[in-house]
Length: 132
Length: 68
Image (cartoon, rainbow over all chains, first blue to last red; front, top):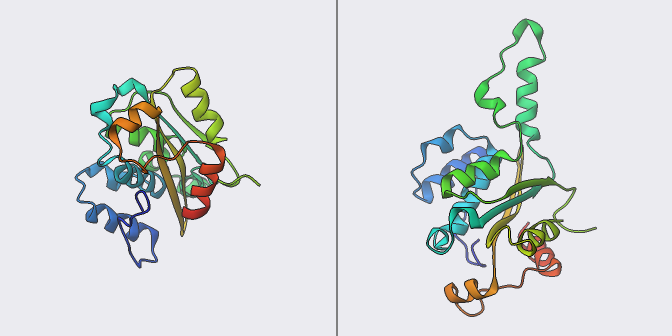
């Protein structure tokens, strides 16, 4: 949804497939997308939809725009994947391409790189997006 | 929480616009809601009437409840 209007509608169960097909549907050309974990892919695509017609770069200098993102699970899915690769001493194969995504604030970094944003960025963790 | 952090950046003149929101991906659970926060005069010059929502805790909570 963008401002209440549907941008992408899919009946896909697999999250990775949903993210890949959404990328294709949005007609984006950014090969680095395929190296990202699902958290970054989702953040990246959300920012693409949000900023597509926002004219951000024409209205603000790179340093004037900030990025603050929150979630509950941090980068846990990728953390688990990395942990699996290092838990067995006899089969110790950590992947640098996985390891870089074991910090949740990398999603703000990926968006910042894509949209040339150089302002303050931050990540915070919360149990829920809604106050309880 | 998000409101406090973003509001502080604006109050201290650290930013003139800010992308903020919630992005969650854990196994088969994906949820995301991002918003662009701007000073009113800049936003008014770019958007259509009615497209702007005041950035305050109750509106953020309402949007999250609707979307997430």
